View (cartoon, rainbow, N blue to C red):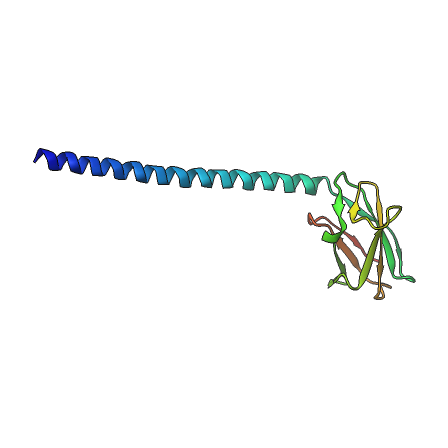
Length: 140
């Protein structure tokens, strides 16, 4: 009877160690993922806070407009979305170039970008949205 109690205790102890090890690994992974998610949230909030764009000019005759990066963040123009009267315009309909830095896709603080459209924008509402979700609206 003594051997079976000792054997059962040993089996239960080993099972406890295995379960504790599995639980510890799972909780550690969960805590690490949660910390990374909070860090990403803080990074995104800081990017939104430091992002600002504005319309400089709108030329309805030539279907072009100019925006300026008024914020402190460097913006990637490939991440911009443009809406004309609430309709999302895809990249084949517009061309974007950075003034004084043609060929660049980075809109640095203080830089301006000229957007040329192949559709008419006369009396149209224009909305430009950055990759961070910050937007500016032109309403004629």
